[in-house]
Length: 112
Image (cartoon, rainbow, N blue to C red; front, top):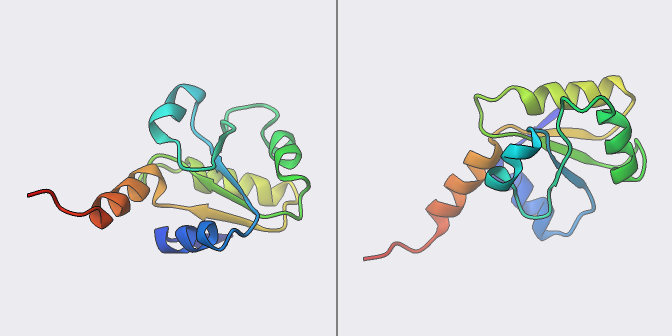
């Protein structure tokens, strides 16, 4: 499984490469952890892998998992589960929603 940095994910988005970005947290957490273009499929969903396969359009298409932050193990667990289910191109965005927001805050012009 590959691990992506915030810069890696931003590059993929900017280059308009097709991939499925999956927030694996419970649905109640999605509004506060949603990233641009992401979908929410909770890791706890009993049909997790089949839902991802349907949304991605097959097991050979790229899937990127993420959760709340670097301390949250859910995205790595989800990526491992997808690999075990036969997905061939899975990556974990380990910084999660907190890392994305921190990068956006750092890039924003300072207000004085």
